[in-house]
Image 1 (cartoon, rainbow, N blue to C red):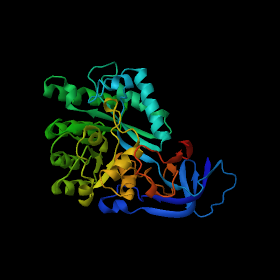
Image 2: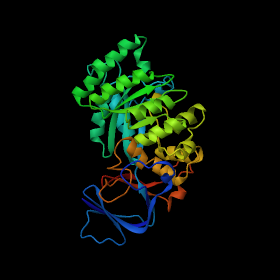
Image 3: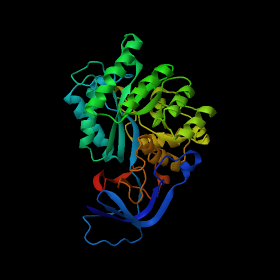
Image 4: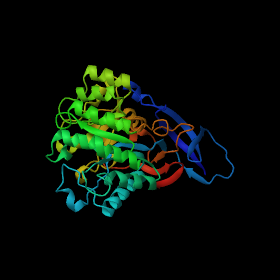
Length: 388
């Protein structure tokens, strides 16, 4: 399929096929008054007055701004029905069959229509919850992912709260001996995430679990759980994790380690907004040379900032990111947190054609109206999937 997007006023994108670190997050590539040619789901050309015989689709951007489709590197798969959300404000409930699949499918489609081209779905394992061996949510997420036009990946999320009073060592042995091998056998999940810190696993426990997961083909991710996060950051660097999520601040030694290892720090403004806490120190982390991404954390207990445009806006309003930094954090760096930066997260020849046409003339017009969507048209893998 060949699609021509004509009359683009301004095309603004990060550049590259990997994470952008530190103050370089502000360095965006800008194309003025260009056309964008998409062929077979990929960006084929960015140039002035592109001529093509008989394209399958022509989209007139009419002078609007174009940016990469946003990416959510931190969502949860168990979406509660609204009637139950108030009863589960701080915990993700167990998978409940077809109803869970339907809610997850609708949530993914809403995100894609609103300009999210890729996302991660975090799936908690529940011991012996079903014939899936505690992997029902992960299995369902992989099934829903296969139906979506966007890039959707799943993470087996293992946190210590699921032990439910069992002897801790026995529970960890069960994760390593049964749950992780089951995921490998069923070929589900791309990542394994572990909560580590004051309210999660100890560093030595998290390392044992993640080494087992890596041996099973699951890439490691760390979730910083409460209090100081430097020890968790050092473990993320040691394991060459894809990302460390829930980061609020980072000391100099940990920042150096994360920078050397190329680990992305995923910051979540949603919990700060919902719970009245301090926002993550994005300025300090960027000043330390870290690659910062922003995620929604949507779906935990049925709550969260569902819109990635709201997440971007909070990044600007509350975390003092520039529009350029916020866009990088929600596109290329978010893609790097999912190890997809060579495929999506920026608009470049050869990469997946994941594009958002904005109802705005420049990115300076987005990110300041929290709760509003700037979307005019969404193109994922070269095909229209949503918009006004």
